Image (cartoon, rainbow, N blue to C red; front, top):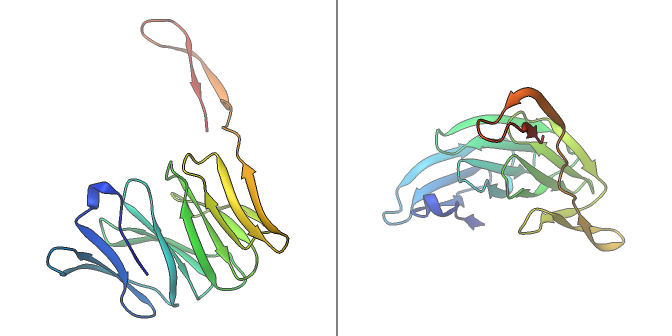
Length: 171
């Protein structure tokens, strides 16, 4: 498996060097820039849309999130009860999904590593706009529409400079 980060890092690529390592290398020279080591075999990886973070699905039941620019492991979590085989970032980049052989899909907060929710599915992919999920279950294929989140609350007392309307904050 190989993959490329988003456009801003187009001169580099990631490849699975052996069963537990992934290498980020410079395309033009083939020089290894970073190595990411995992305790289990790497099954799949996904870049966040900005190209900074790298989510890795591993055979050791764990999900890893790397700061690819710094070469630092931000967090790893064991949420699956079997090998993690799929991963996909939401187009906003603030969370991503993993799918495992345990027939569960986990949604992970990219910043904290918190497990946000679990779906009884085998595989999942976000639609291009992030408003839908394509899933596979024992019953076949599903398309799940995701509704945009409404504003969570209004901050009163804080005004915009020109129109005196309160700010709306969506979480």
